[in-house]
Length: 273
Ligand SMILES: [Zn+2]
Image 1 (cartoon, rainbow, N blue to C red):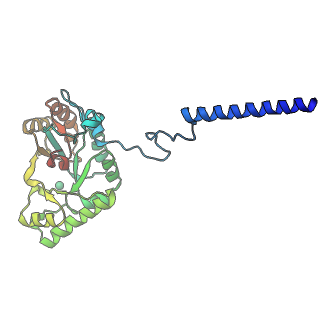
Image 2 (cartoon, rainbow, N blue to C red; image 1 turned 30 degrees about the horizontal axis):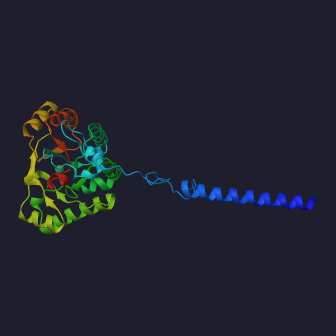
Image 3 (cartoon, rainbow, N blue to C red; image 1 turned 135 degrees about the vertical axis):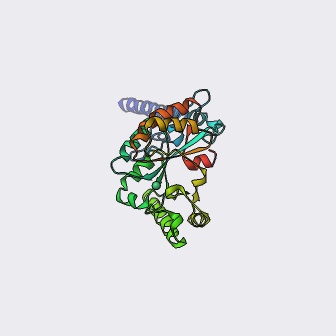
């Protein structure tokens, strides 16, 4: 009698165990097993992964029309940055970098949230390579202003080639980005320079720039000149390391923004982006 009761209890336990197992499987199939079957959300960055900030996010939002950021947020209506907004101006600064003044210049540009183009002197950048990384991090472009800052119109084709290719090489080595544009020291070019520029993958922008003539001017005079010369597609030629220019920028940039202008690099301006 006792063994019969034990067998009965055993059958009951086995039956309950099967029932629990079936129920568990049923629940798992319908609701999923937490953790093991579902992977981590794809948007979560893994440790050590650098978040990549889209350049558009750093652009100024303009009143009265969707900003580049808004366009990116729109997903389905993803447009090239600047599309439909053709009031573009490129601020350029020759003679980059200066060890004493460039940090201040980069600070001013960061405060104003603009991306600009630095026409770089190759040998100066080799002496202060840290500025290449900082400028690139802020979204600025480094372009060619020769290696030794020589007047190219007085050089032989061989000398021109050397000046352009060496400066290209310095920028490429430090940033991983090949320059596309040349600004001649003194702002004068000729057919031979154009030819050598092309051979080095460069376009000479000298005929395209509006020379603000900022060296030796007061901040007020620089502001007046920038406001008077502003037009869609303008490429302003200014200089790195000029205190008066740095004082003028926080006035010029908000003013031109209030007139609907966006500030882009030379490359983006010439590509109509
Ligand atoms: Zn220069």
